[in-house]
Length: 496
Image (tube, rainbow, N blue to C red; front, side, top):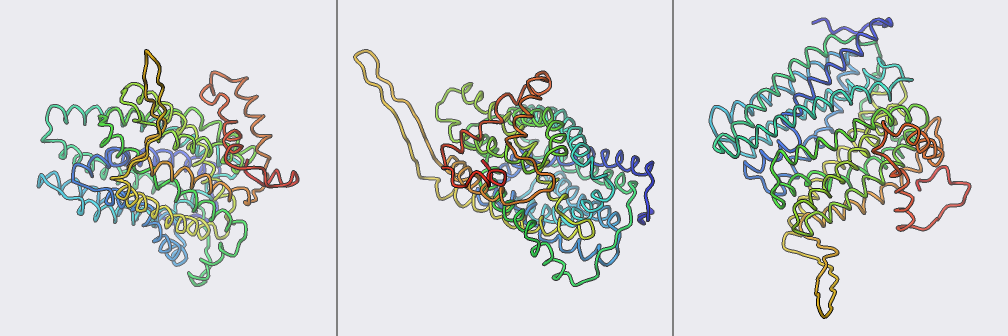
């Protein structure tokens, strides 16, 4: 393979590269669909994982991001981001094949072996990440970053929806009819994922790379550059607080549905797909508005909605009515899908936007490394808290007594998982306080963006019907939890 970068890319080469990167995204999505989300959690539980091990499993992909320093060193030494991304992609996929073959051939497995090999899977993926991000920043025209990556994400999510539903139906069928082959099924999934990932690495190798030169300065001195940048440091603080708060609860949503609610994998995957579909239907809008206005405003609109969804998890399972709980889960997943589409796209874009072109890989790597530390602390903290609250309960009830009718209504029922969800929501609200301090070029006051979005939605109801008036929910929520503390002159810079 010829992986040498080119000094200048023609328009034709750029268009070819954009198409290749989309195909790379599709092959990568095949890989992650087979091995991630509910499938990985279900496999870990099948191998006997406890709460702390589930937290560690969720922390691994984030903890290994600290090794992105190696990516900076490699780019500084060789100035070849494509070679680093492609070779590390190949190395990352091999552990998946080993995990699958080990269980498949020996008809057994352990959670420790799974954690061991997944460490190397995430490790090489983390090293490849910064090189890929910097490569994409130079190859994709800046004025179409939001639109291009929202389109790429839509394609991968559509594939994820179709594939995951089919796989979930297959898993439930085997679990109900041939339970002795359930673990073997997951082993086959890992093997297929590894092969698909290797194919994706080969596809990625065909995309062109524009030449870039990273300073030969000491790695630690390079690492300090983003920390000296006041605005980027504010982004790091917000990002770190946000991911820590979310990851206290997020990895345990699936565990809660499997262990406490007893939902089949197909139900869990279907709910996940509903969330993905909600995200797909709104991603194009988020992408357009992030390009036209500001990523910060999109986060300020979508993050409170996601926090409401976390709070709603505290009410799942309070009553034993299956369909009532299922309806609440449906609403939660729709809201989460809409919100995460805007949050993830905007966080990626604002990081790319605030990173100086000359040292983009350094800034992006520092962002990933620091947030990775806090991200990995979240699930491990969640696992410890889940064990602490295992035998603790908090119930708030209301009782109606009359001559002909007596009824006790459960208002709040917190236990093992619900405590995590509530703590996560409260910390997420606190994290939002740091968003207003970030300055973004071309920033538009979020109230203006909200009015424009509302007008756009009303005039294009068929396309954006899922959003309705939820874009104003955060105003109501914030009014309840805090008083106005800033003068009117600072209105544009704060999150409200």
